[in-house]
Amino acid sequence: MEKLSNRSKLVVNKEMSFKERIYLPAILKGMSITLKHFFKPAATVKYPEQTRPMSSIYRGQHVLKRDEDGKERCTACGLCAVACPAEAITMVAAEREKGEEHLYREEKYASTYEINMLRCIFCGLCEEACPKQAIFLTDRIVDAEFGRAEFIYGKDKLVEPVDERVDISQRQIWSYNNENA
Amino acid sequence: MFGKKVPLSGRNKQMVKIVDQPEGYEGQGFFATSLDKVIGMARANSLWPLPFATSCCGIEFMATMGSNYDLARFGSERLSFTPRQADLLMVMGTISKKMAPILKQVYDQMAEPKWVLSVGACACSGGIFDTYSVLQGIDRVIPVDVYVPGCPPRPEQIIEGVIKIQELAKNESLRRRNSDEYKRMLESYNIETK
Image (cartoon, rainbow over all chains, first blue to last red; front, side, top):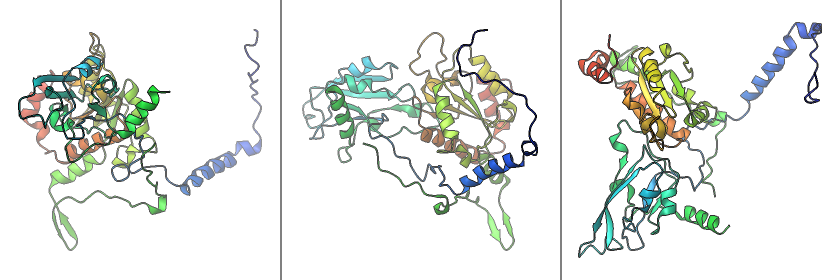
């Protein structure tokens, strides 16, 4: 038969030498490799106590941003829900009443905004679709839970508190660089 | 660009964390506590997982078992590839409708007490695969104890899920698996009870 490549090696079933037959040198060689690892620093990160460095543009739990005055940016246009490949986002739009100008930036806002975290695949298409820079993914990870109901994240968990802003500047820089690349 | 760097401590700098002792009476030369707590502690710290890995979440599970995250620290050193000797069923990946009876059979074959951890969007709810062929969440066929979201979840999230399962195992009453409520729950999933 014609050779397919010249990398093939001929197998020789030669008799083993005395050194090979007693196996001790091979065992000692293996042991020395094991022993070497006793003196190397351990690779393990003790997770709940220690954490591993993580990319600052990691796509984790979503945040609904407020503007500089603390008004919600989302206008419930529904583009994120349309863009979502997993259909994890639902919202109900409502009209801003008089006296609520300090709460919502525009005349229309989302009275309920829910993301099903079990459906969500954290692809970031909602963030890309948003024309109002309202929704962003952050580097917070979503916790494991006992029941399904806890995974429907409403506005209470998604909208950032006025006094505890979520920093998304790294993601904005990243998407700006990507667009102008 | 990357987050704050955490110094990875060497072997000699590490603190060994030991499991807390349960509540009980202590005195000179004796320690008395309830059987529930001792068994719960033993169960929680030697969960043998059965990895039911069908797709990419399984790769993430391999990272969890690897030396960087090392699930063995939680007493899950020994993966059981037979359901008969497993305590924890970890379902990782898309379960199609044809796979569902097999998953149910695997759950059936496990001995009590058993827990189920559902890892990833596909196993929890079907994820993006809202189609005719994919099971919309494994809790359609078997009861699930802890859900881990993500597509796929990070090893940290899987570890968090295992810690939650440990919490369940630790605080479970010994009579729970014999209770009528538990039997009724299994019957609601059409799982035979002996």
